[in-house]
Image 1 (tube, rainbow, N blue to C red):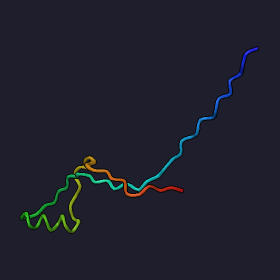
Image 2: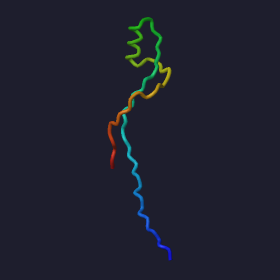
Image 3: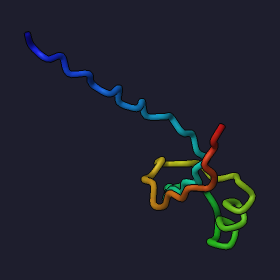
Length: 66
């Protein structure tokens, strides 16, 4: 007679959600007469994104637990 081994059930991993703060380095452009005018346009949000860029920093802001 063979012995039947009882296996303990493995605990199932849980899924956790988080709020992450992600900083990207993006390339933007504007048309302007001077560097000062270009800075003002960028500051007012009137630039155009040329490339999405890569993530340069990721920080856990909040872990959401139920």
